[in-house]
Amino acid sequence: MTNSNTGITSLSYPDNLASRTDVSGTSKTWGGVYHFPKALMSKLPYDMTFSVFLNRSENFKPDAARISLAGLPIPNASGTTTEYGFTATALNDKISLKVDWFKTIVKNASLGETDGNSIAGLGSNAYFIADGTIWGYGWAAALQDGLEGKTPNTNYWDYGAGSGYATGSAQYIATNAYSQQIVNAWLNLPVPDSFFASYNVTPTIIPSLAKASGQLDSAFTAGYNDLTAPNEGGGSNFGDHQTTVDNLSKGVEVELTTQLMRNWNVTLNYSHVDATHEDIDPAAQAFISQITGFMNGPGGQIRMWCNTCTGNLLGADWNSSIVAPFTVQLNDQGHAAPEVAPWRLNLITTYTFDRGPIKGVFVGGALRVEAARILGYKYDPNFKNVNSTDPNYANVLAVTEGGLNVNEPFYGSEDTHVDGWIGYTRKVYRNVNWRIQLNLHSIGEKDHLFASAVEPDGSLALARIQQGMGWTLENSFDF
Image (cartoon, rainbow, N blue to C red; front, side):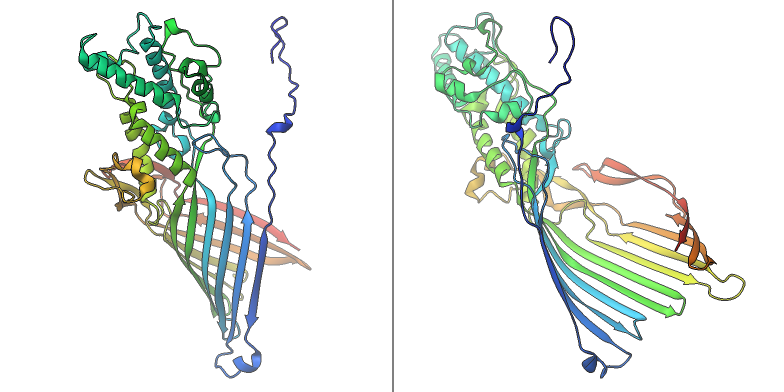
């Protein structure tokens, strides 16, 4: 801290042992291969061999501490992979075929991390999780003070006037009776005391203090001035809240290697994967469902920025800013994961000259192809939330008609590139080999933009720079 007399700031930072977290676990990997006996394989033509294999691994990621939308710790990610398949060769290993089936599930993987206003990957309006809640708390505190006659010369507390009722009328009195329900809702705001502090918002609010005293302004630890209410607060540096997901990937990989001639090799590799999100963060689901119920009840009836104005209700903005993007994630469960290529194809070939004046020269090329990826989803005003029959989403049901339809994805284009290389190798001294190689990447291409996300109407939202043709020169000595 800085000394107020000298202006010197100490660089001695005490080690807070209470802030440490210890994580331990065990990673296990095992596998086995069975080669069919030569006595059996000798009965087959073309010098065939055949073997089968099975591998399984379990591991965990001792990651830095992560926190949920509610500001509570998130368990570390863990994964399990199972793969099995076979390898067959023929013609004295000049032809080799390997087929590998695999299945990987990663639990508690990061689905979305906080980046600027996009808290936990929920989009540019996700700041509303923190700011909308602390604003509402300040307005509700002003409302309570107003009902108790503590806020002269301010219109934030006068909820009844927002409906155009005359002061003292039956409608005004009834509306202000409902205002007490709003206050009671905020006194029982369903968040832990760590919630506001975890988002770095100001002022500091501890909800349990208000619940204990029955006065919302007592939750403001730095004090609350009734004459200058409301104290909206807020922030823009939200830490690193995350949502998690169980990622499931399963598929098959096929690799065929052939030696067409003594000095000509060709390899073909093809992989197909079905990648899906299987279980969107149960903690985030519970939190958003609970706060959505709160925001669609009395707690969300605070009129934003001015209770005598005709602006949006707090709950309405919560529904559009938070519930809408989170519903897309919920509906995406079990569907093909966006931005993941479902298949890849690589073809690689090299020819080496082993005689004549160009002995030692080799040339080769490669074809790389990736399937089109999902870049976004179409907006459908009649889209129904598929979770509407699940009682766990009862609070979300009323606000999810219309939205991004995960059954109507927008796809990008296939990504195809051609590479080439030429080189020379020779022995320069006893067991010392010299090798020089020129590589050309993405032959014939220029730097260009490649779509990576689209808007709900199909127009471009985000693009990445695709590098055009380039080259590298490698020079090495092996001994």
